[in-house]
Amino acid sequence: MALTLNTESKTYSELIGNGRFYTVPAYQRDYSWDISEWEDLWYDIMHLADEEYHYMGYLVLQNTENKTFTIVDGQQRITTLSLLYLSGIKLLDDWIQEGIEPDITKERRNELERGFIGNKSASSINITPKLSLNRNNDDFYQQYILKFRKPINISRQKTSNKRILRSYEFFLHKLKEKFSKDKNAEKLAIFLEKSIAERLVFTVINVQDDLNAYKIFETLNARGIKLSTSDLLKNYLFSIAFKTSDIDLKSAESQWQSISEALGSDDFSTFLRHFWNSRYSLERKQTLFKAIKRVYKNPEQVATLLDDLQEAVEIYSSLSNSAAEIWDRSRDNNQSKHIADIQLFNVTQCYPLLLAGYKHLPSTQFTKLLQAISIISFRYNIISNLNPNELEYIFNEVANKISNKEIKTAKDAIHKLKVVYVDDERFKNNFKTKAMPYSGRNKKLIRYILTSLENQLSSTDIAYEESKVTIEHILPENPAEGWNDYFKPEEQDIYCEYLGNYTLLEESLNNKIGSKLFEYKKSIYRNSQYKITKEYIDYTEWTPETLRKRQEKMANTAITVWKINF
Image (cartoon, rainbow, N blue to C red; front, side, top):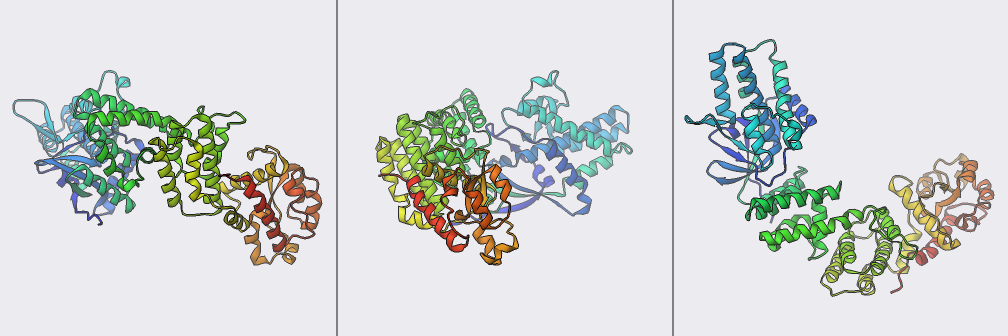
């Protein structure tokens, strides 16, 4: 059943007023906005005169107690607005020190503080803030920003705290510029209270628990509104760790940071899903959070999960890096080559299986499995363009059996994969009609296919990345008019992209032929060292019929190159 979003629109003034308090969970991510986001926000504020309201996006809140809300998503925006209002209050303090209508200015200053920052009790000079940040930022926010103090040694502060200070200073500088010629407390107050707070509008979604928060997140993502999947998953795990002690939370944070750094540009939630699918039944992103909650319920289980993730991340990050140190490069056990092939195919459905295979199979057995996955992926994904969902289900099933020790050898694993191995006849027929535009990733794929065929024909070991090898279009990409006698003009773009129209050629020879007619090209091809060129283009003319004949010969060779003997 589809999730219905109960939403309401609120201005920033309505959000921050009426005795409301907001908390960023202790385990939420640190403040991360930087100059580009601050400038964007200030630009939007300065152009509010051009629009009645400015839309600030979705704000997902969880009501924890009366008028106290946990910010599930949106803490970067709320924190930044708080820093903007603090900079306005600081500017009023400066004007008071300058003796600019001190009584009126002080009154305006205190109204802004009560309305947007927090209240001071009669017995304390400290503010009870409307906003509490996470465990890494809140102390800095309260001890320095709320008290308008600058740390003695800012260089020792966390990066996120430095950003908080720079954000506050950025908006203070902007407000000073704006009111440099008219230091008027009333005008500044109107600017902050009316021009900004009453015209910045959020769509507010209130949720009852973290599972509903995740469902909200998925629904928003489906509507094209990008929120932070990994943050929400992280928050759940950290909330469990936090139940035991602050020390356990620190350990969890440290591990999470280590895993994130090891992943680099890889998406954390995708890694988590692939990790999960290497051990448990297949889950999609939409159901992953619920599955994690079902299995990992206490701090000990979360600690185990983080340990397992830290162990797996080195393997996972290496799956997209054939040069990684963990891969065997020996001639008989060249794991690096197979990883490079899978990288080239841009196939990730096999990652859970590779995680399971690397962890539980001996190195030589893993190599056999790796090679089989490469061949299956080439037949299934690259040449046959079959539905990747079925492939993912089978890979998941075999991964689970390896993780559960039901499968202990590569041979048994490969046998289970036979159902997604495109048989020779079907593969041959698909190869015979395969076309690939010579652009983007296809350039490498075409080079890979041709060099693999050549290596089979000539018993050579040409690397497809070799710079001296060039790709020749027999029917040129921009054919001269004489080619119209052999290929109809309206067909030339189509036939130009067939695999049978591509061949390997030495750079020195390729420079000689350009877009010349086949009769001339044929004399050049005879001088090539490559059999796929010298022997596979032995025709008197180049037409759609001879192109198809050559591609069929290539297909016959292909079933011997990409083959598994079950």
